[in-house]
Image (cartoon, rainbow, N blue to C red; front, side):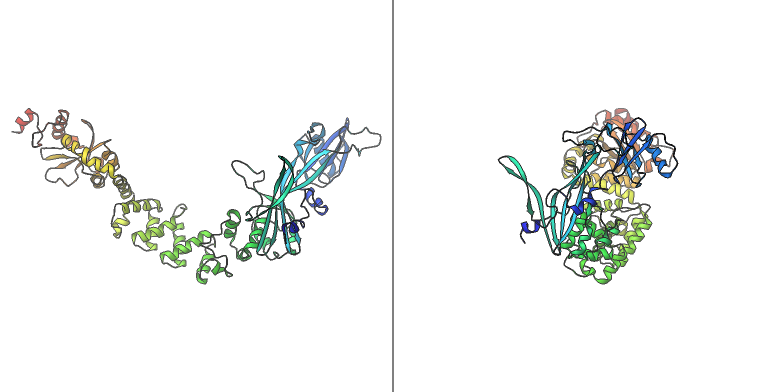
Length: 576
């Protein structure tokens, strides 16, 4: 069929609704009102749009019936108050006609409303979907008064509703085929003369635009579907959409509100597997397809006719996958289990153990455990146990990435899974950061280190001051002395701080005291564990050495030609 032949079958191809849709769509889509006016003092006339009935009563009439109880509420109701219709029980919005103002088009601008609507119809086995806007406005009507004879005429005419529909997307849907059109403007001589329909080669997944930052749809892509009985007259009658909507708490009947009906029907025409997925409960896959248009071709086989084949799994794998939840996240984990070389059942058992063992859920923790188990050469069970002991995988993963940059031997358990993970992590990450800047390391070796040696290195009374050769020595110092100097490595290489080592002259490789200097001034000197376990400090234990060394530094660090420090004269005599 040509486009013109198909479009001619749309009963709402124009702007107005067909008669059989007027009653279903004209009411209950919009706000229902109770229009109020008082033609005479003490008399009140109310017109209820929900049921089309009118009610007249004198204010102050004693309440003698159930209906009069509502009447008492209406007596005191103010403009824009909510109330219940005493005739049909619907919720109505009170509008005093004297408060309404007319617009330029002869209607009441404050009462204008519009809604997104999708109309369904069937023609020769084809489902016709017309998506557009349903509008309603209120215009002045007649002055008829339902009160007692002889009373004065009404002060204002009763408003009458006008409802019309403007489609902007139309679809002709059959199994295996979707044809779509969009409404376009027709211009002639720079003037808009009307509208026409243009074919869309690739129909979008959503008939209504969702909210965006620049242009916000009032209903955020939501719409109401009318004419759902038409689906049963087409080749889409077995699509199981009623079961899919039931999962969202919706009934498959006229007035379905949401943003799934048209999307589901359009995708079912392209992918009849939606019926199988719906009946098997794989709603996550359907949601991803309808909401995001993601077909996940790497994970799913849309040409398959069986559930295992659709998910590219064997029957046992599919059974375990469905028992675990049957979502796309679980499917990714099945792929992960196969990559790791463990059975699906074992993988999901370890996942449950990890989830139960952690105090709070950690996103991606199981995936990290798989990666870490391979990087460290341990089983998945061992990796999960280690992650549980240390409260997650983030610190461990960070440590392993830094250790790989430093070419650590991760086949050793004491290296890949250290007992003191937090301390090893801090040291390794700091060292990796330092070594990562090769230019800074080379500049330190050529320019900063020689200056530090000339200015600070000193030997006296069995002790000596040494400058660190590289960042690794500072990291190792902090680890051995159990303090935080390892975090100073990067700043030391950049020349922002000065870190020095105090060693025994007979044991120059064994950490003894760590020193921080600021020019000629001593900032701090720390022993093992920051000297928390002793009552004295390095300065009090070796006062003579620190006095002589600091005096020598403040004197300009004088040296002989062979580099030997030149001590003050009085110290040379005393030492002789």
